[in-house]
Image (cartoon, rainbow, N blue to C red; front, side, top):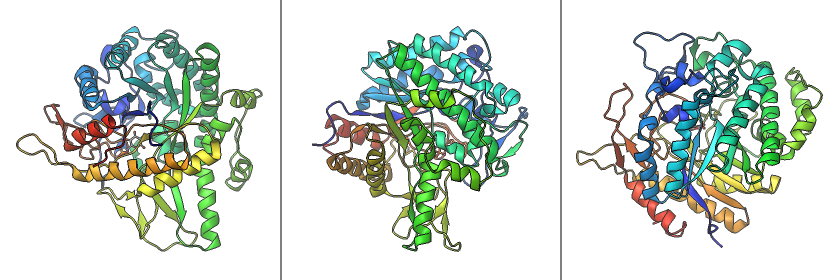
Length: 478
Ligand code: BGP
């Protein structure tokens, strides 16, 4: 037993949090390009027009655009077999609406994938990771507009054909279920036309988000179906933000609420993407919340024909839910909840729960029975750069070790686990706060919250530890 021989060990990133070069070589602005920096206490803001003197962290990010060779070489040195990255839609179609793609953008990813291949690294490509062309927000209110499905299909056809010999593993949308949450309007559905303000102030317009999600389901299914027909070698997965939740008490009301939350937040999107149809509980959920989802003839058939090949998810934490208010709350990876008295939290208040990962893996596999991959996991923490250039991040090693141990348990339980790509293997911009101070990497980047820094890369202690883990295929976690 243990991890399979071809286990995809690696790390995960996203274009808008890493590349920089936000307006180079024909790239258009995406939603995150319109977002300012924030912090744990001050929310980031969306500005429909750029403000003079304001810092927009995605504009330079960690400048992967110019440093990808060095970065991929460092990943290769760690022994990566897989590198999860995303393509910036706006490099290929700057507004999302062009008829022909931007050759300079396509050429950039040719170089990146060739570099991965040179090092024997399998790219895992997220087609849309928390960015959409801002022009589509202005014109269609993001994914609420049905027209965006065709824009996305054109984008998918272009990149599938261009990279068919370089990329085998794909994910359609990052954390698609974040569209069920308020903050998902900015990160995911793009349903923020005309909105100007902080992430805390974004309106909770469920109707537009759930309509947008329907369009994303159809778009994803059509992309999967097209890929299966034209590129049978591809493996395409869905990607869920796993907000696993426990009932705070054995009160039956808490039990029911935990089940409903799992259904409505976590499974709502993956049931569609893995099983090819809306789940049985959707109708009641729409009714109870006054939601009306406009569908066209053919949509159901598309969903049925566009089932994904594998299930992937991000896992950082768990929360408790309680029917009666009053207990201590914790923040979290978009989904907050009640504090679990058995768990500790990270510096950013996210509850650390390695055993919850084993529980989650078993839940997922029992539900779907398709191969599973953990494509994000990790500890966002403040690191100290020592004068000699070292970074002693034993806390990160502890976090990763405990989670890998539990993944191994899940494999022993019988879960078909394909791989593990911890988040932000190289330090990058935080998605929720826009900070650099919240670091996840095994590779440190000298870049700071005020936008300064040499951008030099350094190996943290976790770099050498993870190198050993990969070398021993997860046997030696010491
Ligand atoms: C996930 C996103 C990533 C990422 C990560 C960590 O929700 O898919 O893009 O950033 O969470 O979150 P944060 O950057 O806010 O710490």
